[in-house]
Amino acid sequence: MGNRILFIHGRSFKPERKVLRELWISAVRHGLARSRPDRLARFDAARKEFVYYGDISGRFLRAKGKTYQAAADVADRRAALAALKDYTSGQFTRARYNRLPGKESLREFFADVAAGPLNWFGLSERAIGMVAPDMLEYWNLDSSFGSDVRWGFTEALRRGLQSGDRLMVVAHSLGTMIAWDTMWKFSYRGEYQPLRNRRVDLFLTLGCPLGDETVKDNLIGSRATGSRRYPANLLRWENVSAADDYISHDQRVSNDYRKMLQYDLPIRSIKDHRIYNLTVRNGESNPHSSAGYLIHPKVSRLIADWL
Image (cartoon, rainbow, N blue to C red; front, side):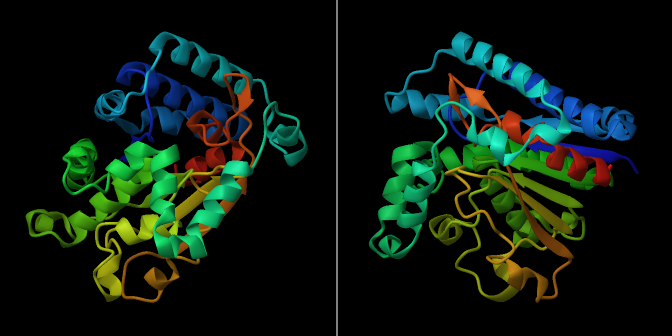
């Protein structure tokens, strides 16, 4: 039995698969080398699979009139990661975060308002459509977008569960929803019955919207009752949210999913962690950036402890 890690990225435009995978692996490796160098060799030896659907989301966003400058985006991503690598483990602080250019929490405030009483009138879905149209499209039953972006993770999860390896899923943003829905399908759909007794050892979510009320209402399985609302193949969940990350504005999932621990499900613990994401993209603070999550000392320690 070896260690296997499935990575799945988040929403919006993305560089090509090879480039994005390189950036993700580089961020994780640097974080481990800085915070837990004793686990770096184990990470290098682990089987790693990067699930990519950026081509699908890119086509959808272009059809909506959005534009993407790939070369400029890649250059900015590399510059942002290089800047993050200059920080020591002790520098990921609130004081340093507050000094970043363009830092503001207006989007988080707007998300909190929209997810509260105003959600009774459906405004939260409209708000999500404004800031994350691809996330809203994920729930559109008249579109193949949801099933298309789940397919890559479906095949990766199948391989992981069949392998018998210890399995960790590292998911960011929309990727957390894709992973959750796919794990639910593997738990209850007949075509996956041979794998029902296989487990995901650790579900590590970054910038995760699964605590949002509208998101919860649209998850596959949300209309089921009792324990069937939740995946039955998950042993542990660690959720990391950054201050002012508007996608994960509800920064706690342990309260939203505490019933998982009360049912006869395999899951043993659900824990939340709050961090400060020091990423600067295009000259402004970007607390939702995957690089800032992946390289953060808290995430490094969670991955190192699992390894």
